Image (cartoon, helix red, strand yellow):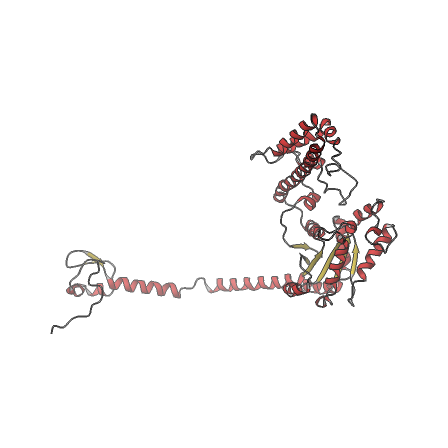
Length: 436
């Protein structure tokens, strides 16, 4: 039986020209040792030396593998740089005091923004983006109020069958609201709405339906909602923000910028950094395990209560005010055992608005707190202050400030007071780190 040679699997390979068995023996010694260059096959074709290809690839790999990416001196310099960075970060971490912010959402937002301005003013780029946002907010608020006016007038018109000039005013306003130009940034529509609302005929036509611009909040009225009155969505605001030379103010940022804001604000002080994180978390006992770890490394806890909400009722519960809700939230946080030894700061804020509301005869505190019959502003504040303190069961107590955090001078004073009282011991350790 004839012997068979095991198949290599390459008999029918089309890679390269076919070579006789005597081809390898025709290679010279130099070529077998890997001298570069092509060799001639018996059929006259040129092929690269297989030995050279193999050896050159191997030695190139070895060279690349053993050659260092940088010299020893460069490696040491890089290592020293990393060590220096780690040391700096460690010192920075020791100088950073983490404050967890809780309480009224709007006041938390104002606190974070005001704290940011104390440390760093708005840049030109931020002002440009803010200008767009403020204009959108003001124009949107005006349009919403005017649509409400149209709905109210239309309902009354159906009942009383008013015609004539009133109908033309309604249609003129409706047309202006519905006109949309994709190339308009709002300036044209704002100008049209402003012009319509300034016409005497417009006012007289709508007043016969018992609808006034003041009723819709389109003009200045007695209700005060912030110390600077800047959050009125009024026609005066529309004209101001769409002026050619309009530059956003700090208060525009507080009240009219509805964009998402990072939950952490850094305040650079002389020897340390205050890192303020605001949290809107559930105080339900069953949910505490999900967020309690967030407070592990915090230096202290800050709670904001808006005094001006004493006569504002909850949407979901018309029998309870927002200030009553703040009292309940404060009690659920301040008495958590994990916070027993952490400094706890309470700010009773929006004081100017609170006092202005008390001056109105129809807004006495007794309407929502029947156990208090007085009306003197300072006595009322003392009464509410005690209501919060009565809820505190901690041995170390709570540090209380009464202030308007929308005022930069007031907030700066609050920060200074903290650092000389409740945070004094913590800052002494920070000072030692800074001197090292």
